[in-house]
Amino acid sequence: MYYVYILRNESDQSLYIGFTSDLKRRVEEHHKGEGGRTTKIKKGWKLIYYEAYIEKSDALGREKFLKGGSGRKYINKQLKNYFETT
Image 1: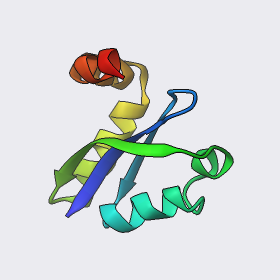
Image 2 (image 1 turned 180 degrees about the vertical axis):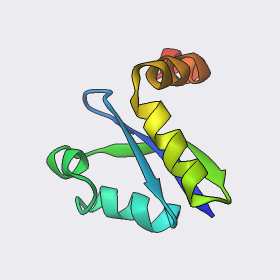
Image 3 (image 1 turned 120 degrees about the vertical axis):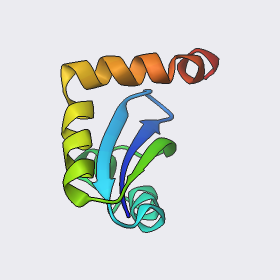
Image 4 (image 1 turned 45 degrees about the vertical axis):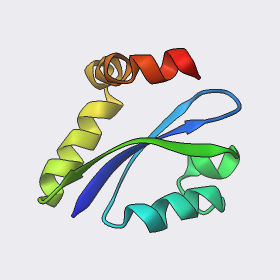
């Protein structure tokens, strides 16, 4: 399985969108500061959303979409209730 996931920074509410084949390991790496450049700089990331895919190419395509303008709008719409309560 391949995963596309979204982390939210608890201090400044910024989002990080990533892709992995091992979601648990990757989230742990982000928490330890071993993740992507953005998550190394900031601390306090929380997993707020993920999707699973069988095909790697589907997951990579979804990650690319979510990182774009239309994808960001989609995220805000899908997680509207979450964002309003936190």
